[in-house]
Length: 223
Length: 207
Image (cartoon, rainbow over the protein chains, first blue to last red):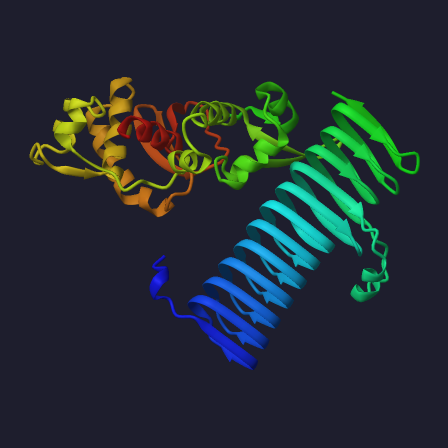
C-alpha cells in the first residue's frame, strides 16, 4: 500500500460518497457510501453506511456503522452499534455497545461491553464479554474466554434491551473458560468456571472445574 | 481411499497444543479452513481433521516457530505460489529436478533458462513420479500438458493430482481438495499427490 499518496477525506453533515481508497477518513454526521472503503483510519461520529467492504488499520466510532460485506480492521474502538453482513477480521476489537455479524468473527483480542449477535464462529485469543443485553454466537473458541454479566445497571436502559442479559451459544471452547449467565450445549476447556445463571448441557474439562451453586450442568466429564 | 480423521479433542491430547494455539494458527491461516471438517456425533457437532495432514502440519509449525515468527511460518505454508525463479543449471546442481526429466521435457531450452516456480513445480512432480517408476516418459509429457493447462485454474486453492491406470490405459486428473473419489473395480490408483503438500516441500528445498 502506497500510503503516502492516498488523500484524506472529510465528510460533514448528511453526505454520500462512492467510497474508494483514502488515507485518513473522518465522518461527522451521516454518511452513505455506495462502494467499499479502503483506508488507513476511519473516524466516525454519527452513522456510516457502507455498501461494500471496509478495510482499515483503525476504526474509531461513536455512533453506528453498517458494512454490507466483509470488514477487515486491525484495531476497532467503538461506542455504539456495528453491523456486518459478512466476516469481521481484526486484531484488537473493543466495542461498547452492540455487534452484529452474519459471518465469522476473528481477532486477537475481543472485548465487548454490550451485546453480540453472531451467526458464525467467534474466534479470538482473548474473549472478554460483559453482558448488557441478550447475546448469541454460534460458537466461541479461543485461548481465554470470559463472559460476565455487567454490574452497571443504568447502561442497560440506554441500550433499551428488554431481553435478559444472557449469552446463548452451541459450543464454547477455550483453555481458560469463565462463564456467567450463559446457556450452551457443550463447554470444553482446561480450566473451566461455570458461574451463576448458567445452563450447560455438558462440560468437558482437563485440570479444574468449578460450578456455582446457582448453575445447572447436566453432565460433566474429565478427560 | 477413505481418509482417516482425527477429532479435535484427540488432536489436542496427542500433540499437546492448546485450544488457543489451534485457533490462533487457524486465524493466521497456518491451518487451512477446509481441514476443519464438521460432523455430527452422538454428543452433537464435533470438528474433525484429516489425520495425516494435520499431524504433519502441526509438527512442521512446532519445528519452525522457534526460529520464525508466525507470519513467516504462514508465508512458508501458504499454498500461494511464491515469486521464485531459478535457472535450470541451478535446479540440476541442487538436485531438485533430474537431468533426464529436463532433457526429456525441455530439450530445446538452453542451460541458463530461467523457470518460474510453477514450471519448477511441474518438473518436480513429474520427476518424482518418474523416479518412483510409476510413470513412463510418454505419460510424463501428457502430465506436463495437463498441469500446464489446468493447474493455473485452481488459483492457489488446494489441489490434488490423481494418476490411475486400467488395463494399461492411464489418465490423470486434477481435483480440488478435499474430495472423496471412488473407482470401479480393476482401476489401479498409481499415485495420488497433494500438490499443496508438494508445493510446501518444494518451497522448503528452494529457499
